[in-house]
Amino acid sequence: MSRITVSRLPVDPGPAAWNAVLPDAAPAQCVDGTETADWIIIGAGFAGLAAARRLSQLCPTDRIVVLEAKRVAEGPAGRNSGFMIDLPHDLSSADYGGALDDDISLTADNRHAIDFASQMARDFGLGPDAFVRSGKINAAATDKGCRHNREYARHLSAMGEAHKMLDADAMADMTGTRYYLSGLYTAGTAIIQPAAFVRGVARGLVSNRVRIFENSPVTTLERNGNWTATTPSGSVTAPKVILAVNGHLNSFGFMENQLMHVFTYASMTRVLTAQEAAALGGHAIWAVTPADPMGSTVRRIQTAQGPRIVVRNRFTYDPTMEVGEQRIRSVGRDHDAAFKARFGMLAGVEMEYRWGGRLCLSRNNVSVVREVDTDLYAACCQNGLGTTRGTLSGILAAELATNTPSDRLSRALDADPPTVLPPPFLTKIGATAVLKWQERKAGPEL
Image 1 (cartoon, helix red, strand yellow):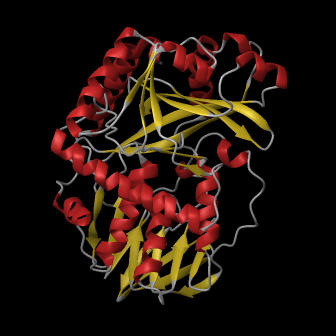
Image 2 (cartoon, rainbow, N blue to C red):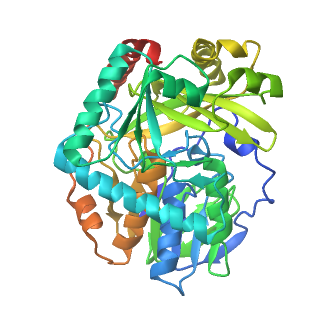
């Protein structure tokens, strides 16, 4: 018999802006009383929804219950920058790249996940406003950033990956600002509206066999033959469970002192007026990641209300998995500075939304896809790329739990476990110092 008491529940700072700009979702259905199923999936983010989809393919008559602690898209899945990146994207490196052979395999796995997401988008009728495979651009604002792009381009050439360098004029034509000196374009990334995507996938999955319960945080998980997940208003019992909770794997008692919990932050402007949009110029929709991993991700988006700009930067190490509103306000000043530096023609445009989102990293950049207890499977630790790696982890956890072999699953199972961290107080000091140092080095890329 196994009994797990969940030590903490998700806390997400600031509004989930991507979700807030969408029409209101249908009323939530939460667990009410006692339910039974063949599968329980805990977490309705990218990993949990991908696991549900893959299980529905592999076990077409099985009943699947997905338990989400909040509303779908209110957690980290609805808070990210919306890039499903296929190529190496190691946030701890200088230019995103790693070992050549590992990066080739990683890219193949990432593309499998993006293909899977693309098929879900087609199957569930999601349009290009939710998912489009348009590629991405690493934007460089400094000479050092340009060097990072050239170094990454050489790495891509060694991998046999096509890419295109963009000059300052091309960047200005796209973005409307002369802030960027160069860009590096690659074609395989999908750009998503994260809340629209996960809400659309969740809506498409629901059937008489797949049910999604929101506002249903799991407080205990107990195995007595089958597993029973208890929530504040009821319980669900099933033979097998998939934990798709990313860093909250620690909250279920697994991988203690092996996972690093980091927050990153974003702000979204109010709607630009027609005059402001004209003053900016450039393309109506665009998105750039920074040449330096610690720099600013920037997107111009089109919402039902009109055009907006999103700025994402800053990382903080927070092992409690919680940050306060004071942090959001403090980081917001950095967002305002980054926005002002890039868009001087938009003086007077204010941020309407500010928020933070949780990341989970391992020191050796590995995910956790494995059986952590009898018939209890993990699809966690996405290393800052939750859209792609979360989707992949969910697929692989479903295949592991159903004994469905693949080369991708073999690679995941053969990977080392997350490296054990130093004592918590040393990790906190060290991680905080490294993040601040890397951000200072990023300079105007931030």
